Length: 249
Image (cartoon, rainbow, N blue to C red; front, side, top):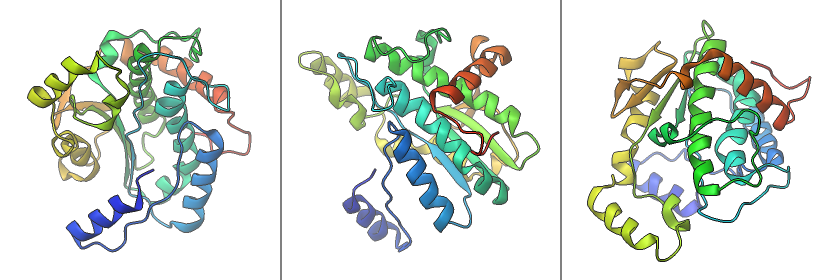
């Protein structure tokens, strides 16, 4: 959740008075449901849904109130449930877009479908796993929404000087600070591919693709495997407690 002060900055810099701040904790399934209910009851049109959640902890595993590993809950399970709960609004708003922010770090991970909720896992590595899940989820979501008027694309934004690195402890944060200062993108630079996929006419009607620096990029064979994606989807439905009367995709 962005603080009201950030909303005021956006209003002042853009002149757009219609900036609304709403509470959402993606690590909490109840919060996701409350947020979706609020959106569905107050919003009549949803042009773009951007999944940009990214939390990472170096050490010390954490479990949510729902029994989910914190990194996987925030980065994958929460967005998975939210997409389902807002899909009706997105379809009614078609042509609309879903943009999922992944990471090239997924190439360093293995998506273990026999342990998708690794509550005893190494948190720093689980960030990579969660980004792998984001990309596989995007591929399956695009397949399921084909012909609906809702497109789905994912991206790697680059290494960015953002708050996600604040959890890196001393002294490991010292060399990271040097890297950030010399090589990492600013938040504005890192947002460009997300913005491109959200609004550019160049990608109108394009779905199921992966982008870096506003250009289509290749995915690993594993990330494109339909069987893996189907299994991830089915397991995720169970972990988020998708109900019979919830929207299904």
